[in-house]
Image (cartoon, rainbow, N blue to C red; front, side):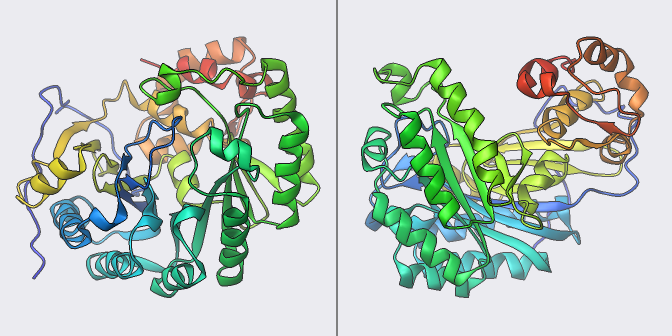
Length: 405
């Protein structure tokens, strides 16, 4: 029996109860499921991931904790349709096929997942074989995101990956034989990486004729191993810039277009899940450290769950919402920044009407800040769209910062 909580606990004393927004039509809704474990944690990673021997993961308890987490969230999204599911981490492919199957079965039982919904799962090439990948597909996964990062064994070793070149090649081939929609994750500006080395990676990506590519500049994030022990052979800034300049031209040769700051795709293969994020859609996150953004007709809330996997499991199964460490309403003053932080990542921008649709507020609330962005030539004076200029695209952080309250 599914129990629906009828009261949502307000955990922030600064919640604005006088919120006067009105959202006529609620945004599309996605589901994110966080799997917190990896075989080993990469030295550049600042995600909520924890090294653990797969044989020591109690998948039964974890699955039950996810169920409890989801049940306690149902009141927030009751009777809404789901356009996408993303199982991320961490390393989701560290789990057994049986557990992934049960996660998807649970989601189908509790939620209205649309027949054409995008169901993505992240895969580490060092944790799968063809049989396991086939099992994930048979469970309902219709899009794989393969965490390749590089095809060069030396590069992979320097960034702490557990797979090698052959593992990556095998995983991509296997995924493409199973589903049409495959994303490859690639990084650049890696320790010791040269231009020629990076071009080799791009050529391999092109040889697979992949439908989607996510590509990231290695960033040294606080509280990571690399932040404490900086690699001595990071490429010079000019070299990194040259690598970045190569990406668009090289990928254009196989019909891939940049549609988001870190994403390229062929026609029809933009990530439904990620585009929902970037167009200020709604998402419910379950699992340790997962975040949510949920709209109602008169308010928008954000939630954050406990990061520690063991503590999250313990709290989630108490069925009293104690696994949620933050639950706040987004104030009218914060909404312009929240909206612009996301939509300006899209190369083609978004309709100005979307601001009203997603926030319930008039565009006039941003008039002063928009004028600043126009004057600095960071935002295009387009009457129909919010779209960054080439300068704004280059200095995106500066453009987004204008809209901070």
